[in-house]
Image 1 (cartoon, rainbow, N blue to C red):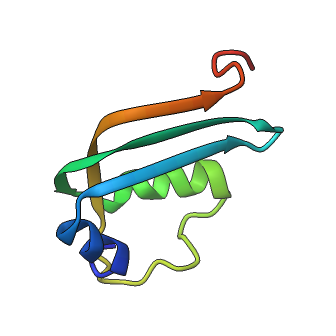
Image 2: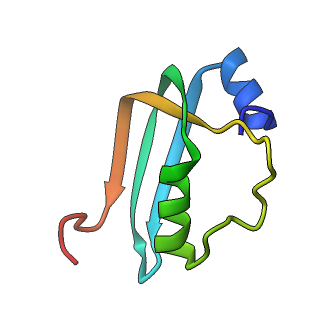
Length: 88
């Protein structure tokens, strides 16, 4: 949400790090570090599709009417990984 503290912090300092861990194998992960290069307004329809697919709900429990959602575009500068990311 555009009102979240993380959004305001990224506007001030665009450095970002993301990490993803395989829930079936905690030793398999991917980390991406980079900088935010753009903020784009996000329509809520794609969010609803993701909520339905991954959470099984039509509305996210924390979604508030009037929330302004944004997509953050990241330019990766460094990645690290452990485990075979291409194997299921």
